[in-house]
Image 1 (cartoon, rainbow, N blue to C red):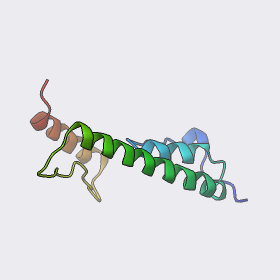
Image 2: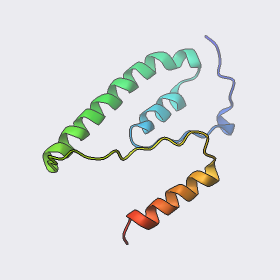
Image 3: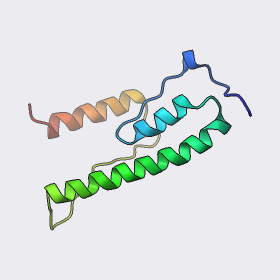
Image 4: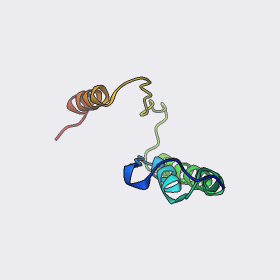
Length: 96
């Protein structure tokens, strides 16, 4: 078994939505090789959770026109630029 090359004191894991499952799997794995069996179960949990939430959302709010994507990928964007993009989005789309 290969040990992880990072130190826990220097590691921060963050996940949103089902990404929390992945962050938890990585945080609970003592090594990269130990991550594989945990990751298989986590992927199944995340998929089942996503499918359940999607089905529940469909039952609560039927939309015959379909919905637009609410996810965005911003490759190569730094933390400051991403924070600005998110802040600008909230100013336009979120009412207080």
